Length: 446
Image 1: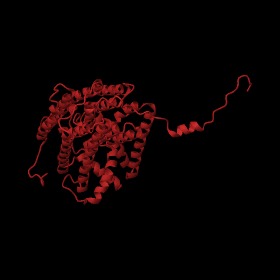
Image 2 (image 1 turned 180 degrees about the horizontal axis):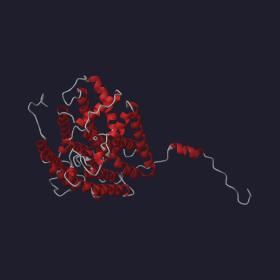
Image 3 (image 1 turned 90 degrees about the vertical axis):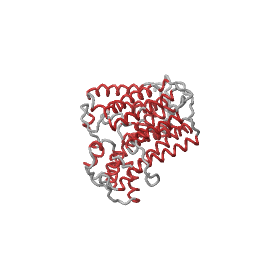
Image 4 (image 1 turned 60 degrees about the vertical axis):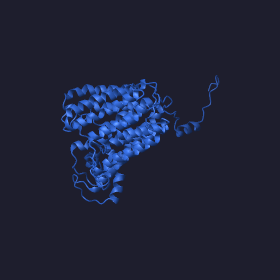
C-alpha cells in the first residue's frame, strides 16, 4: 500500500491484536458471557497464537495447533447435540457489517497484491501455462511444492492464465525467475478464490439460513481472523474450501454438489474423504447421481490432462507425480516441518486408524442425515486430517475454516434434508412403454 499509505505496514502480530479487538467488538456477546457463541469465538481466535509461534518457536507452535485442532474437532463432533440454537445478532447492523466486510476485503487483498505470492501458487500457474502451450514440464519445483496441489488446480488456473498472458507482458521477474504474468495470475486467482468463499458464505446465510445478516457476519469474520491472513495467497488451500462451501449451497442438487466436490478432490487430496459422507446423505437414488457427477468430473479432468500433456511421461507426472509418496510413510523425514517431525512418528499409525474409524462412524451414523449433520461432520473430517498429515499438520486452517464458520453460525435447520428424488425420466418412459402381460386364467390348461 506504499502508493496510498506511505510507510504502512502491519505484521502478523499486529494484525492479530487489531482483529481480536474488531472481532470482540462485533461478535462477542457481552450480555451472555457463558454462551456457545463466545466459546466458538475463543476457539477460533485460539488458532492464531499457534501460527505466530511458528515464526520463532516452531515446536511450541505445532503443539499449540495440535491441541487447538483437538478442541475444534470436539466442537464439530458435538454440534448435533446443540438442539437449541437461539438467534444471536451481531453488535453491528447490516450496513455497518457490509462496510467492515468491504474494508477488510480491501486490506486483505492489498496484502495479496503487494507481497510475493507463494511459490506453490506460482508453480501451479507455470504448469497451467505449459499445459496451454503443450510444453514438457520443467523440473523447477521442489518436492514440497509439488505435493501442495492436485492436477485439477492447473486446469482451473488455465483460463485465468490464458487471459493474463494476453493483457500482461511476459517479462522476466526477479522473484524466483518467474514471469510477471505468472505472478499476476497467481495474485488474481487468489483474490477470486477468496471472493468465491465470501460469496458462498453470504449466499448460504441468505438462502439456507434465511438471514442475510448472518451471511455477512460469516464473511466478515472469515476476513478478520488472523489465520486467513496467514496463508492468504495460497490458492490451493482456499479453492477447495470455496468449492465445498458452494457444494453445501447446492445440496438439493446432487449432480451439482457432486461435480463441485469432484473438482475439489482433484484440486487437493482432503475432499476425497468427504465423498462417502455425502453419498450416505443423499440416499440410494441421490448417491447414484452424486457418484455419477464425481466420476464424470474425474473423467473430464483426466481427459483434459491427456489432451494438454506433451507426452505420456508428462501426463503421469501431472496425475500422480505431484504427490510425494515418501511423505505419506509413517516414518517422517519431511523437511517442511510439522508436529510429527518432533515426536515419535510411529504414533501416527493409531492416529490414522482412529481417523478411519471416525470416518466410517460418521458415514453410517446417523442413518438419516440432515444438512446440519453433513456440515458439522464434514468439518470434523477435514479437521481430523490435520492430526495425521505429516506436512505441517495443523497449519492448514483454510481447509476447514469456511465450513467451520457455517457450523458456528447455523440455526437449527431441522427441515433441511436431502431432496426427494424421482427415478430418471428414461427409466419412467421405459416402464411406461412396457406392455403388461395377460394373466393366465386358472384351469384353462394353457
